[in-house]
Amino acid sequence: NAGVTQTPKFQVLKTGQSMTLQCAQDMNHNSMYWYRQDPGMGLRLIYYSASEGTTDKGEVPNGYNVSRLNKREFSLRLESAAPSQTSVYFCASSLRTTKETQYFGPGTRLLVL
Amino acid sequence: RKEVEQDPGPFNVPEGATVAFNCTYSNSASQSFFWYRQDCRKEPKLLMSVYSSGNEDGRFTAQLNRASQYISLLIRDSKLSDSATYLCVVNDDTNAGKSTFGDGTTLTVKP
Image (cartoon, rainbow over all chains, first blue to last red; front, side, top):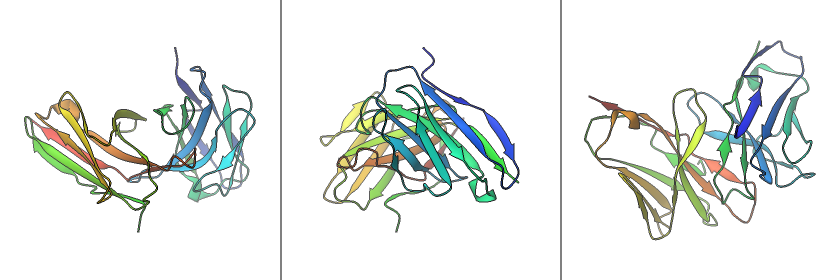
């Protein structure tokens, strides 16, 4: 039982490049989330998906797009990366809502030069 | 003012000590509360939920004070393995996706 998996683990981009961060969960959870964590700070919600086929903006959605491909997979896309998007990105899932435990993936460390 | 505030620390304590962290929140509509633990360069993991009546899990005790809008985490008999960052999480359950994380309190337990 892998839980929440994320790829890639590390990525270096140049300003203006695009990339997609992949996330998958095998716990049959309905809700999935993308967060970013900057040094010395807590997690900030980028986007979330309460169920397959729905997505909603979180606190810091600018510069990102998401796709809930199916119940298992939730991807995050940076269309034109900027140095301000250098961060650690965590994907998480929960059974229904944030009232339940959120299970996090191991994170993707992104550096934008 | 941040919605969720924590004392960043660091808290440096000897093994066996008792240490307490507080977390204040500003949204009075907040309805569910959690403490997560994050080890260095790792993902956060649930430590415990916080219930209105307070709850205990071994050496860990969590309490909620709705009137003053804060939650607390007490760790008794600290172990070296308790060294980590502790994140306070506050949810507005009327908004299914809205979890607000504090910036975390760093604890280092020394021999």
